[in-house]
Image (cartoon, rainbow, N blue to C red; front, top):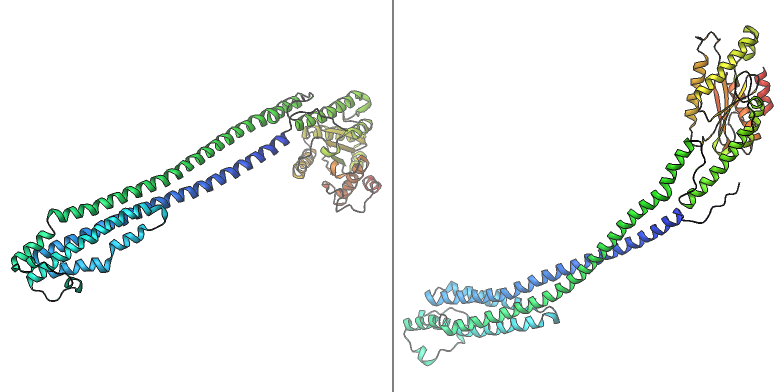
Length: 467
């Protein structure tokens, strides 16, 4: 049965394109996120560098202030520990020189470095004034053990001739007068100008990186927005072309009507296939004359009805259950044929109560019956086994005055058979196997061949049941 479907929207193609688009967007988002991470790292590095350069500039000023404090204290009280602190800072700690080294990063920091070097030059010049003040204090106190560098400092003739108290006063003036603080201000000015250059450099670098990050954030936001819209569109489209047509189809199937061919191409194809099967099925049923196709005693389909049903069933979705009454011949012999007929009527009544209305029950001879379980592609063996156990349980009930009976069953799914003839032969062999097991049981044929009936033939099953 070949089905032609009109061209339209294919959910499969839509899903493929959606997957491609989502993958591309995911790659773009991943790349943007990776790039943003690198940008953030650069901003963090720039901020750290900014703080390091500022710290270097302040180190120079802190070192200069420390030297000033040490020399001022020494000139005020002549305590040699302040002299030692001064030269420890100047020649061992070297914070000023370290600040210059930290500032000398690359060409970007040259402007700030030049300003800091200017401040350093003023600091070095100020040290000469401080050396002179310390030499005056040493001469006034008469110290003999002091750094070699101060021995090279020569006092002016007028200062050299001053008495000790005047020398001490003169030393203090050298590190406390306006000229001294003007030089200190020159150091601070150089440091401030250096900091300004550092700020310009960092603001420029951080501004550029922040602009890049904002642009990347906008791209990510746009992609997320597009992805969200695509998800809503996909949900809407799937609902419109797939879910809604399926729900409508379920209602039509419940109403025993053809399915409306709408929605995606894939569903239209399924609808067309179903409708063709539906028309074929309805035509087959209409062609059956009730009296010609049904057993007069039990109301089940007779052999003619069975043959017509067998020729029109869909093997891929149908189970065949071949069954007969255990020891039926002894019932007829013991209770008579009238009781045997009542037993068969009861059997069909029980079968109809257990199986669905769509399932077809056929009497193909004597006490031999076939049940076609249609639309059963997803039904499990356990479900069928429960039905058979329920049937045997009801048949064993003697409250209606009938003798207890049981059935043996052979079961096979149509998709396991090559054709309807093969289907019946395998089900017949399975029934024979059930009889061999001791009756009152069932046997499933799986994989197109039952492991317990590999060597059995259909006529062997019939001979066993006749016995």
